[in-house]
Length: 166
Length: 280
Image (cartoon, rainbow over all chains, first blue to last red; front, top):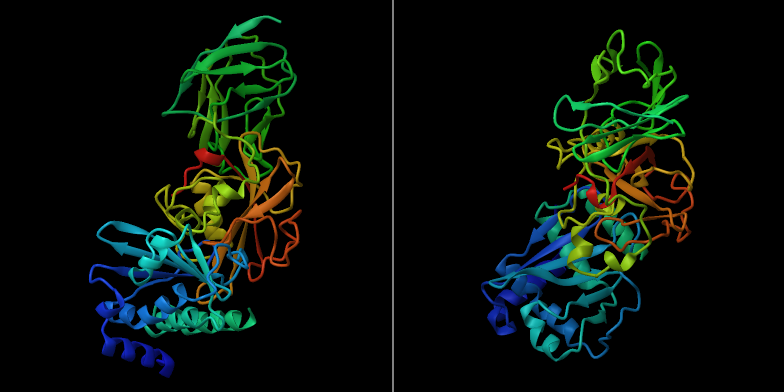
C-alpha cells in the first residue's frame, strides 16, 4: 500500500499550520465509515488528531464555499456497491452523525458538524450541501483508509473504479 | 357441531405448530399460555396469534411420521393427511409427529396434545408498507441499519447480522451459512423459487436473500422485502437509502430478475415477522 503525494501534502501542510488554528479540539474524533457493503459491517477508520488537522482546512473550505445549498442536487445513493462515506463525530457530548460524502456532494449535518464548521452551521437554518467537484475529500479519505489497512487492495481498487464511474 | 375440550401441555416452554387437519368434524378449544387454540370448521387448527417460527427447520415437502397416518411439512406448517378424530377423548396409542429424530408433537392416549418448539407472540406481525421516511434520515438511522434490518422491518441501530441475536452469527459468507443463521433467528424458509407477489406468509411478510460471492475481499449478502400492500419489492443497501428500485433504476417486481449488481446468487425466499423478528 502506498501513500500518495497529495495525501502526504495535505497532512504535512496541516501539521505545519497546526490543528488548533483551524478550530479542531483535542477531544474531537471523526470516524469515517466506508459505505460499500449491504449486509456485513462496513469498514471504519477513526482519524488521528494529525489526520484530522490535515483535513481541517479542506473541510473548512467546503462548508464556507459560496455555493452551499440547503437541498442536495443528488440524493445519497441507494445502489448495491460503493455508495459513499458516513462520518460520525465524537466529542465529550457523545457521538452523532456529522457528515456524509457521495457522488461529489458533501452533506453537513446541522448539529454535530466538524468543529471547523460549527460556526457556519450554527448560522445555517438546517443541513447544508456543497459540491466537491472532484470528490477530493472523498478520495482522500478512501486513500487514508487504504493506507491504514482498513480496506484491502482489491476493495480499494473496486471503490476507485466506482468513484471514477460516478 | 359439538365442542370438545382438549388439554394442551407444553413439553418445554412454549409451542409452535399450525397444523391443518383434514376432514375436521368438530371444534376444540383450549389455551396455550393464554392464547386460544381453535379447531375451525374449515378443518384448520388455529393457534390464535400465538406462534411463529417453531417449525422453521422443516424442509418443504418433508414427510413426517404421524400415527396412524402421515403428515407433510410445508412452509413451516404441518399438513395432516391422515384423519384425526378429536371427537374421541382417548386414543389407543400416542400419536407422534417427528421430523427426523425430533418429536415435534404428540397426542397422548388421554387426548393431551404436546407441542414442542419456540413460540413468539405474533400480534405485531403484519405486511410491510413502503415507508422510506422511516429509514432515510440521511444520518444515524440510515447509517446504522442495514438490509437485514430493513428486510425484517426492524430498526435496531446495530447494522444487524444474521444469527447474532440467536447466538451464532455467520462466519464465512455463503448462501448456506447466511441462510442457516437467518433460520436460527426465526425466519421461516419458503422456497428457492419466486413464490409470487401475492404470497401470503400468514404472520409476517416475504423477504429474499442474495449473496455477492465476489464482492472484495470476502463477499457480502443482501436482503429485499415484499411490500405486499403495493405488491412491489424494496430494499436498503447498507447505509444507503431505502429504495424500491434496482441497480438499473427499475421497479422490482421479482427480485430474482432485478439488477442486483454483484449480488448474483439466489439465497432463497423466507417469511419473517416484522417488528418481532429476533435480530440484532
